Every structure is written in C-alpha cells, then in structure tokens.
Image 1 (cartoon, chains in turn yellow, red):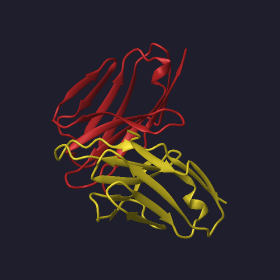
Image 2: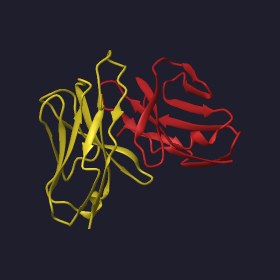
Image 3: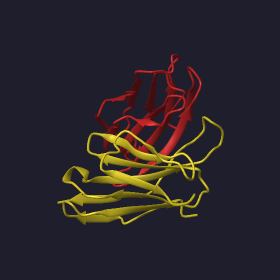
Length: 115
Length: 110
C-alpha cells in the first residue's frame, strides 16, 4: 500500500497563475483533508471531506477550492495564486473505526512557492 | 473559535535529559491526538487519548489527558537524538474537525 500520495512534490508559480494539487489514498478511507503548514503556525485546515460527495470549509479556505473526485482522490485548486499562499501543503486521510478513533495519515507534502 | 495552545514553541535539551510539551484547549475535548514530524517530513500519528485522566506509555514517551479533558502533555524520558522533531497535539471537540496546536520543536545535542 502506498498510503497517501501527493503530486507534485515541489512547485513554483507566479502570482495569478492557477494550479491543482492532487492527493490520492489507497486505504479505503472515508475522510480526507487538506492542510497548510507555515513556520510557527502549525497545521491549519483548509478544507475537508467527511465522505465522498461532501466537502466543508476549514479554518483557512479563502483562495482555495476542492473536489472530492471519488473515494480515493481529493484535489486542491488555487485559482489565482498569491504570495501569501506560499506554504507546504499536506493531504491526509482517516478511516472510520468508531466515532472517536480516527488517526490521520499524511502524505509527503507539496512545497509551493508563489513569486 | 476553538483554539489549541501548545508550549513551549522550542526546546533544546542535552541527550539524556527529559522533555515535556503541554497542550491546552479553551473548550472540553472529546479526544486528543499526538503527532510527530521529523525535519523535512510529514506528521505521523503517535497516540490518541479519549478518557478523562488517561495516561498511556510508549517506551520512553508518556502521554496524559487532563481530568477536565482540556489539557494534555507528552513527556519524553532520557531523550535521544532520534527524538528530534516537532511534536503536535491535536484536539477534537465532538462533531468538529481536528484542531492542531502550533507544535513544539525539540532539538537534542549529544
């Protein structure tokens, strides 16, 4: 099992460009998440999908859109990139082993720089 | 909104010394999780605590959940260089998404 995979690993964009970050998991998990990590800020939730067909905003959704393409895949789109979106982006997934037990499995991250 | 505060932000220790990081929430949590992120890596789940006053151990690591379910701690006994990284707590209020603390970055010198 590959676990959670993310593409690309690195990306440099110019201000105003758009791009989509891809995430896939092979653990048959219902829930998937997108986080951004900035120095000293920890992990902040952008969007999440509790199940196929549903998406919800997290703490910092502005400037982003998401698509839960199927149970395996959850993509994050930046329509018009801004320097403030320079960050490391992590995708994660979690399964349903009871209501309270839901450890998150993280992908390797995408390091995005917006110039 | 709900916040999970974590202290200290940074901690440097000599190998063999103990280390503790603390996590506090403004609201009662249904559970709390701990993750470790090695430099350049991704967060990896360590443990989840659910019950009031719960204490769990993993080798040299001891995790506690407060009686009021608003605070938690991770204690490492006799640190090793392999313990280097950032430790995150993440708390959940029932029915909401997990909220991560800002993490404590541990460095260890031999």
